[in-house]
Amino acid sequence: LLLLFYSLYKYLQKPNKVDSILIFFSLSFIFEAEIAMGIILIPAALLSMFLYKRTVNFFRKDFLLYSVLGFLIPLSPHILFELRSSFLQTKSVIGFLQNPTQSHPASFQGLLIERSRFFWEYYLSLFPYQNPTLATLFGLFCLVGIIYFVKKNLQLNYARLSLLFLGLIVVFSLINSNNFFWANYLEGLPYIFLIILSAGFDFNLKSKFLLMRNTSYALLIFLILIAVFQLLYQQKTEINPNEISLREQNIVVDKIYSKEGESDFCVRVYTPPIIPHTYNYLFTYQSYARKTNPPREDFVGNKCWFIIERETCNFLPIEKKEKIECEKRVPNWKSAHLGPDAKLLERETINNRLSLELWEKKISSF
Image (cartoon, rainbow, N blue to C red):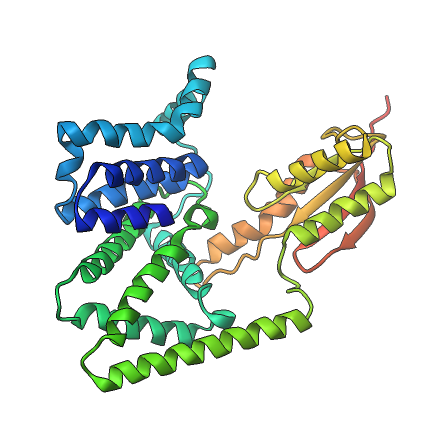
């Protein structure tokens, strides 16, 4: 994402083939790393460049080849996989588009509220203690610099292009209202916010008004002091009881192995992003290190460990339906994986959101 914005900045200076390659190269890498983010980002980037009248060069014969080449390089392993597997994933995507699964339908109002919360939370993550007052005042201060900076220079065009880019990302994120939309689809947003804030802050530093310049320096010093204080304070305090990081996930895996040893065992995982990649990696690593079999998904000796990461379910009062649905996900998931006579043998709480449970499923006798 940083490469994309750097290439866009250079391209605004003077359109050239190298930056054209890098723009499409970075867009393709983003798409390959997170398809959902790429689907939103690619049209937003191209449309914002088009509105700034910078896309015309992409379609010239001498530029088009380089643009296509830059886009295909990161996708080449995926393309080879598709060719070898008879376009398995392509067919799945086409089938989904033809018959979308309405697993999480939402009204436009609910959709707008949900996306706004995602954007706001990513914006707050840039500030010490995620303080909303500080974030709002600083954002307005930087926005004043972008709006009222008189000189029409490259930096101003770049800042306004970034604002347009961000606005289009908001628009494209609202298109699909029928399915789950996870916050991690928008993980690169803080970089976009940071670029816009940096440009606006720089404009205020260069303002012809002494008050604006002095306010900028005072605000910068204040932010640095607060950030240093937060860093020192966090080193002396315990980890956030609501946070699930690699540390907590490692603790869970180690606890299971400390109880099971080298025996075969069953593990099932519920995580909000659905696919438990981190746990799969940790268990694979431990199985190699301990020279044991990786855990199974089927019950072993009628027993299975359940790792459960609970969702925060922080919704606005207007979102009652969404909150109820969120709170039911873990119970519904457990019901789907356990019979009616299953018995809880052990339960250990790692923190407010992470727990480890050992269940025994009774087998019906005939």
